[in-house]
Image (cartoon, rainbow, N blue to C red):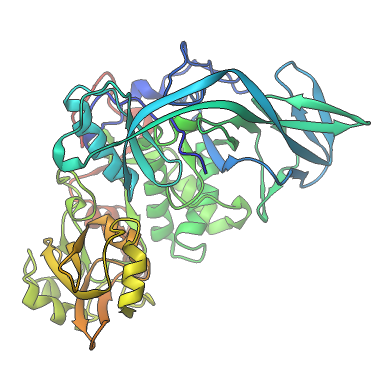
Length: 521
């Protein structure tokens, strides 16, 4: 896959990027219009128009259902019923129950010259944005991209980033071809350069689900294409809530998930501006899948919290959540590089009597006792406690891209832990004293067999280690298993949110602060 991309221009470090209502002003592109293209070609990327700003009265998200579409396989689009209508840029309309779109390579003349410095890869958008902010502070015009993993880009002439961020690599490439789509009808081929609008009155089938649309097929910043759905915010939640927490969860837990999914979406509108849409549909954003899975209980949870968001100082919070915290929540700074957030701190997730048994910051000597106990909220989750055994060969393979010269590992050692007991730095060393150190979210990104970073490491003989841990996910913010447990105990929506995000407020979208350029984390 080519490493060409373009991402959001940063005006301040994204670790402290505040959502402000001016980002949601009405106007800009209307529902059926493509966004305006950039005023000038940026040599970092293929030219891509920005997604429209959101209207706070009727917010509509542009969600990428599929990214990096490219040859060779044809793109097959099917209506769930009735006809699909494809509208080309020139206004021509094509209708059929099924559209088979084929790829064709077209010359780019003159060639597109791509020139940039590339910093990364990063394990998450959050870590990339922190690095981007620090590079920006020394005068670089920085952008964030995700061609495969997250990266930070700057022009070749930009100043070097702070030394601790690493040395960026240089990319210089002339691109003389691009992929375009064509529709073959009645013995002739119609070239479709995009963006293309798709209407499906009875919905369109995609990856086993049915989505209402309308849709766009549009070139991306990498030289490929994206399939984007334009979906109203509240309908978007129907495709998120049941797939994130489960449609059978109790009412208060479903309502909490609805509030957090809405809040997260509004705070992260810039995440995929690189490719001309707001959010993706997978775990790099929130899982957005077939909205038909939203039954009556899910729809009621969404309706009862309509346009409600969780705020700190009048702006949407960093509304992260995860499956289960293993008994203790992580602070933001334990998971991602960046400053601590006042509402995302380490805390024991249990009744007061249990909390008193585990003082934070958790001493390493206390961690085995915590992992041996199940007296915490959400302890019924199947990965609340877990063990994994990894061989030296598995470890070497997992870190090969980061440390190609590393030999067969002979030692695995925890170098640093956070307040919740989570591993902040894990060293893997070979017999020749070469080593690689994995930090924060890079631990789970590299060692994908580990459900969380809340673990202890036990040697099991030569070239073999046992990881004993708890939790599934990053551990910051709401534990979905914990929220389900608390809802079953009779806790209200407000109590659950206050428990996991102390100091925050539940407010309507219309109450968000306006005219601010910073402030709330």
